Length: 166
Image 1 (cartoon, rainbow, N blue to C red):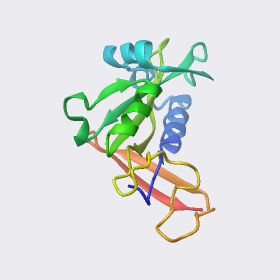
Image 2: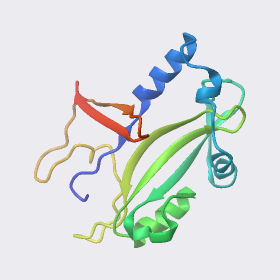
Image 3: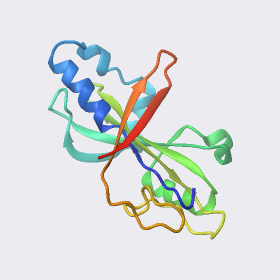
């Protein structure tokens, strides 16, 4: 993890879903389906944004951060505030953070990104990805090209991503 921080961005998938919704190919109920747990996590652990919901355009989006990793044991999968993530990153070797945007008004929810966090086992430094770290390999200069990713949800619910350089 130390040499290859990668932030996976799901914005292309979001645009496709919203485009299909605008064309009438996807019903509002299919994309505004936040579970009660997710709505509760947004209310108590979410970080408010200034960005309006792309579906209802009334409420502001809330970002909910979920931490997953073997080192977290029973607490894996819990919603966390940003301050809690910083504390975890200082004490836990490696975990993944998944960021979900949620509209508390209409129930829109979308996986926005995921990225690694945690202490670097090699140096003891906190593993916070920066824009310069994305795509960096040991001994190489940062890649200045734009990286885009696409994702597709399979029938089994697993999200597959593919990246490409432009």
